[in-house]
Image (tube, rainbow, N blue to C red):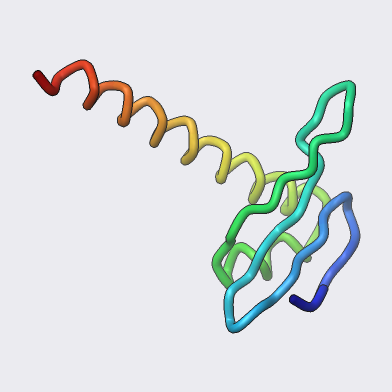
Length: 78
């Protein structure tokens, strides 16, 4: 895995055509998180601190939505 970008509190790596964004999602204690992102998200994340933040927030929103949908399926399934 090779680092292709490091700034704005994020680090973007590439491995075999796949892109990964590393960031600290901890509050009081550092908690490093690695997420897979698309090429478009990779390019956006490198533009500015605001764009990097938007990529992270979009991922977190998708993750929350997916978790809520999974919980709903568990409640509906007999």
